[in-house]
Length: 214
Image (cartoon, rainbow, N blue to C red; front, top):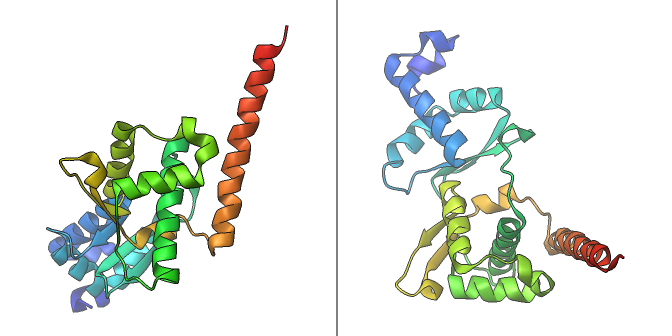
């Protein structure tokens, strides 16, 4: 760790350069959810944050953010511990993230693949339709799906690479997704998925009953 930071008793005594770096790290963690050292332009920031881990964690804790470090993958992820930074998502986006979680988990746990897990948009769509067929009316359109994937990319949950044919577009699911959606196992995932299914189907039944009422 930088001696000038280790020997400091207050943020007020941080050198200007370190203060700027600390602010930059915090802004990226809040806005994007992670610092990924393998990404263009983030290598030096990740190195600084890792070198000055105590200060980075202390300042993040002020915002109720818990940091998870994975030096092998060169990333640090900020996970909200309160509702202040929780992302509120529509049903179609929730279904997409649930499906991505499932694809990541089965690839790592069952097939022994190493992250990031690579799939195509076509494979994602097939998986969505298989798992949530009763909610087909709630599944995203092709344009909306791209919007959801780009949002997930901004939050450092995946990498999305558009292709000439939309179905061939690539998705690299990052391990950060598993901490944002912290299911214990597939049984836990199934319980949550069934809860979404039941809630939507119940709502549809209620709407049908209202339409049939005299």
